[in-house]
Image 1 (cartoon, rainbow, N blue to C red):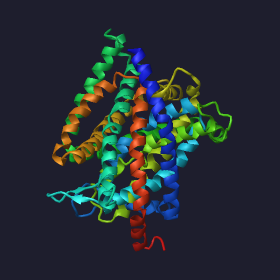
Image 2: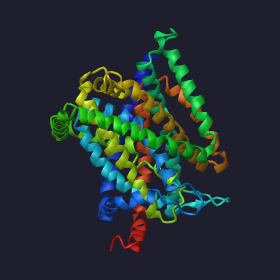
Image 3: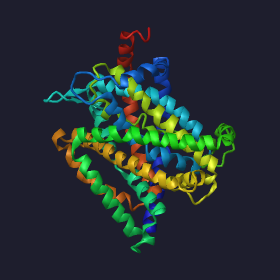
Image 4: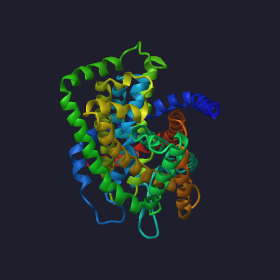
Length: 449
């Protein structure tokens, strides 16, 4: 079994190696192009973006707040709490700078993609909107949009599987609760049991469809983000004398051309981009699938609200996680990685039981992520077949939760990075091709000449 896992890890690394450079060019290069194309003006519209967040329109669809909450449920969670720890473990403190810069570029990408998700979408027979990358590809690019949409949707079936979340939730349970010390079943058996419980719990929400998912996430996510923020802020204030030296270390290591990370300096940059993309999913095309269902009648309104996602999940939450992990010194322990590393950092800095409080938040974040990711897969499968068949994907999705609980985190990260890269390529091509449509609406609102 171990030989099979090792072979799988090696194969995934070999495939991902060239694709990560393509993803770097697509996200960073494409994002910088869109930054220049928009003159960075959307980044100056944060105040109206927060105002729009709570305004409702009397049209069919979910509210902007519900759309953003659902997207944040998928991104603010284990990607920020566990993914940041993985990045620091692999690349050192400097990786945070490249995550921050990618987040700013990601805000522009989210603005364009979610604007297009409202501009170019279809309407169902009951009046509900139906939008997302596959729809703006097909409707906006007449000659070769459909092949791009199919490519994106096939990759999406695997990219949105709950592999990382289920794996890290299981690992959290095993390391904090240590169930085998109570009932000696064995690690593999406990992992299977944990995966089964997660699968059953998720089923109650995801089989209820879009309305059920956004109702639950819009109630859970704001509370959990608030709790995590205040707990993290308390730790940082309590260790205030270490914050500025840590920031100095982060920026020094970010431009360390002799870094020890695999691949040297450029390996560090790519690692930061990969983890930031996984954290806020900018360029991947997931967020437009929720924002495309919004009540917004103007695409740029939805684009501004969507732009808040990377700001909150990468710039805010990832920064808190990263600072705590570095200040604690836990990242220097070579046998700690992923969620286990973050838990140890919180335990060290929060009176010895911070890991237990974090466990509660991680569980809620993780469960909400399991809910929201299922809908992405439903939309991808519905587009590839028929919309009414989309819900059948949920059976495959629920089953994969159990499998994900059993495999190693390295295999999980490899599968997700590969699928996200394959989703990112057609999506960024479509965004650049259709950017003129977004700019035209920006001109109509007197944002740009």
